[in-house]
Amino acid sequence: MPRRVLREFGTAVFVTLLFFVVSEAALRVVYFIRQSMVTHVPLIHTFGGNVGPDPPWNDNFRLIVSDDALVWRMRPNMRLKYVDLYAPVNTTEELASLRHRFWPTLPAALMANPVWQLSTNSEGFRDGDFPKTKPRSVFRVVCLGDSWTVGQGANQDETYPRRLNALLAREFPLAHFEVFNLGVLGFTAFGGQKLMQRVLQLEPDIVVFAFAMNEPRMAGFTDADLRAKTEAENAPAARAAARAVQKTEVYRVLRYWALRLKWNPKSAAEYVKGARRTLAWRDDIMDPARRKPWMDTSLKAYEQYHLDMIATARSHGADAVLLYNEFWTNGVYLRVLQKISRQERVPLVDGSVLLDEARQRIEEELEQRLDLRPAAPSHHTPLHDQVNVVFRVFLGDRPVPRAIYIVGNHPALGDLVPNKVAMYDDGTHGDQRAGDNVWSYAASFPRGTHLSYVYTNSGTEGRWDGLDLQHVRAFTVGSEATTVHAPIESFGRIYMHADNWHPDPSGYDLIARGVLGALRDNGRLKRYLDALPRVWRGDGSP
Image 1 (cartoon, one colour):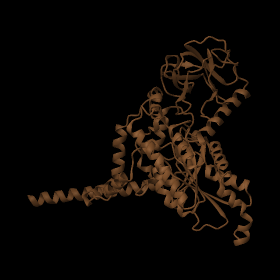
Image 2 (cartoon, helix red, strand yellow):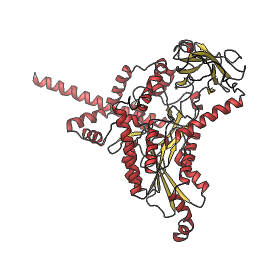
Image 3 (cartoon, rainbow, N blue to C red):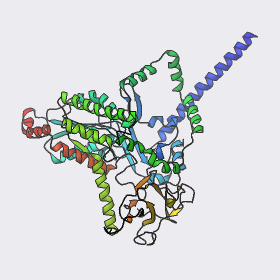
Image 4 (cartoon, rainbow, N blue to C red):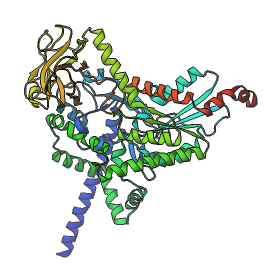
């Protein structure tokens, strides 16, 4: 009896292992075939980044990998072509299904969306392979930062380091500039400090430090945490065996489906309603009396990491430039950089101001082009608690089968019921001119009200279809006038944005020009330019 039981048990184990091995091999073959069919990777944007668990069949196109020294880094030798889906969609469910579909082809309609390409070098940076030596005739700038430095949403030559290189070459045609891109997606000043050793190997004349937007995510993360992570990964054999199983495709696809079944995404209404709460930490961190411990930790670490990086660069003969890469104007991390700039006499480029001024120019030029500038408010108008706000959105040549709708966190904006409150292009309800493709809607709100809203195009009442973007727009009622016209927005576009978090190529160009302005006053660059004839005669370097 025991022998028969043992034989049956052994047979069961053998069959199970055989099934596991065959399934593993089959999955790998199928994934390989799928990978060979992929021509474009869909870059999906959803409210709150809520896209559900990662499908394991997309692993070969994942750009970020774990790193013992840096926490994470970008994968080397990647060649990716992204279809950007930061654009109007039929339904929010449509985006989620695109992320989780196995068949790699995209609907023909989406192939008309913007496409941008990204390539990484043998070290995982968005640049060509770096030279091993530095000629005497070269002036070298190293750009260290996060996804703004990487240039998410833009092609290779549209990133700000590439634009800076082109602008330098145009302004100083006899000089030889090299601008290297050492940006890493999602990086913070903590990671920047860890990368300084590689930066110094490149013998830079100037290092541009550009960190801000990701700092809250890494608040309190220290070298001790990094060591603990490494030790956990080098745990005893039992854990190593478990990790080996977890890396198999069979385990990972089963885990994916288990997580998929439990995934319960929030509705668009919840994101619109909670938009103000989501950014409430910004109000808290600006006020020392309201700051939470993690906020103080983040600010102190942010300052110290920058001081350390500047000191390290200077100790190796390089100058520093600070770049504030955020849409948040006058943000608290900018104030830290302003303090460092004064204290260390380091130039600071405020990217938020450059982008905000460009946004205002777009709004003003659109108003002027469409001849929709509202009349100046009378200074003799008595102040009322209620303000009449006129919302305006430009459709351009987009078809509107029925109407444009506005939905927001206030009863006058539909109280989060989509496709209920219609806008007008007929000269009524606040609309300034009929038939100009600027749809308008007027409503009264108490002064000081914070409004969060989105637009939809000809959808069905109560359903989130026809949405213009996975982006919650905002307006604060604060004018002293009785009636105020909100800036003209554009359906399917946020000015100067490639997506919710990154500038478009014109924004990267503005940042490059801002950094160029800081470099013009740099003493090291001036001395290099003054010595150019002697350098060229001395070693004959091209």
